[in-house]
Image (cartoon, rainbow, N blue to C red):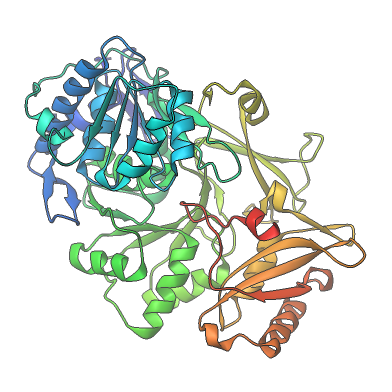
Length: 526
C-alpha cells in the first residue's frame, strides 16, 4: 500500500480500515483533496470575517504553518499548545503541526490562568499559540509558570502566525509516522480537578470519521457542517473539522459565543445541512422559536451530545422544525460518539445503540456484567480511545482497564437494546435504599410546560437521609412561586415512582455548566 494511504471497506459492518505502514493522518485529510480535484471547493466559511478558504488554500497554509512550527520548535518536545478560537488558523495550526511531526494540543478557551499554567508545565510544550482574546489569561499563566515555551505566537496582529507563515515554504513532506504514532492531545475540562491530557493517535481521527461520521451519521461531500460546540471540545473537533475534511464537505466557523440568535443567523445565512449542539442550547433555541420563527429548512439532521437529551426536547424540536435530533454519548478519551441514535433507528430519551466499530458493557461494582434493565458503570472499547493520560499513571490505570475505557457514566440497557443514561456514577442517588437517576427526574421536570431546564442532586434531610433536590430554570422567571413548586412536585409524583420525586424545588436563573454544556452538579451540592 502506498505511504500515508488508508483503505476503507464499507461492504462489511463495521467498516474495515487498513493503514499504510507509514501513515500521517494529515495526508488523507488535507493533501488528498488536491489529488482528487477538490482544490477549488470551499473547505471553510469564516462567519466572523465573511472569508472562504478553499481546499487548495487550506493545503497551502497547512504546509506553510507546518514549516513555521517545525523551524520554531527545533529539537524540543514538539508539543504545541493552542488557545485558539474557532477560525481558519485553528485548522492551519492543528494540521500543520501533525504533518510536520509535531503534537498539537487544543485547549479549552474558557479556562483561567491557573489551569493554563498547569498545562504549560505538565505538557512541557515547545510552543504556545493563542488568539488575541485570550492574551490576558495566557500572559498571567506564563508569568507564573516554571516552564517557558520555546516560542509564543498570536494568531492576529504584528508578527502574527498569518504574517510569519507567508515567509515559510508552501512545500512540506509529511512526517513518516504510523497509524499508532502519537498524534495530538486533548485535555479534560478540569471541572472536577486539574485537567488531564488524553493522548490520541493518528488512527483515532480516522476511526471516528468512518464509524460515526460516515457509517452512522452519513456525512457526505455535499454537506455543510455547523457546530455550536467549539473545536477545542472533542465533540466539536469532529463536527466542525475532521468530519467535513474526511469527505470533502464544508465547515462553517464562528468565534462567537453560541446563542440561539447567533446560531439561527448562521443557519439562515450559510444554509448548513448538519447542525451539532448540546441539550442546553436546543432548549434555549426552542424558547426563542416560541417568540420568533426562523428559517431552519436547510437542516437535514441535528446532533446532540455533552449531556443526555431529554425526550421532551426531542419531541418539541421535531414538532417545531420537522427535524430529528440524534442524541449520542462520547468523551474526550474516546474522541467522539460511540453510542448513538440514527435517523433510521432512534428512541427519544435514550443514547441509542452502540456505534459500529465499538463495543460496550455495563458492569456492577465488582466488574461483573449486569442484567438488562439493571444499572451499572459503562465501559466501552474501540480504536479511537486514547492510549493514556500524559504524566498520570494513576488515572490511566483507573480509566483505561485491559483495553476497555471506564466512562464513569451509569447506564442501563432496556429490553430493546437501547442504552439509557442515568448520570455520572458519582451523581447517582440512593433514596430509600434504591438507586435513583437524577437524569430521570430532570427529564420529568422538563416535560412541564413552564420548565426550561432542570438539575437534580442529593441533599440530606433532617434525618440525614439523602433525598432528591431540584434546581429549576423557568421559561419565564416571573412564574416562580410556591404554588408552581407544589405543582412541579405533583407533576413528578404522577410520572415517576413515588420515592423519586424531589423533596425541594429551587427556582434559579441558570445552571452552572462546563464549557461543553454539562451541568456541574457538584456546584449545586456545595
